[in-house]
Image (spheres, rainbow, N blue to C red):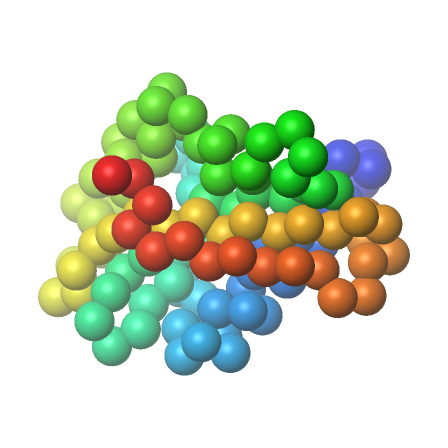
Length: 121
């Protein structure tokens, strides 16, 4: 595993732990299809969240969520539509973003996590 995939997997693990503490159940992790990949799919009692995880060392240049541009949002929507066509659910779907700031990368002891619900407005 190269350094980039290692830190990405670490960030997704941090996001999954955070979501579980918030009462979510992780339904899928790294679900891939022809449209792209959904980092996490998580469910609580009301919502099915399609979650994009963005990891950065800091927000000095821009907030992590700003890297989820319109093109990325369109790919995530298409992937989510395909997932929903394959999996029946009564839950309300939405798109969330988890920003993780880890100044020391995987060595960061307490990363800063910002959870943005219904992030694609």
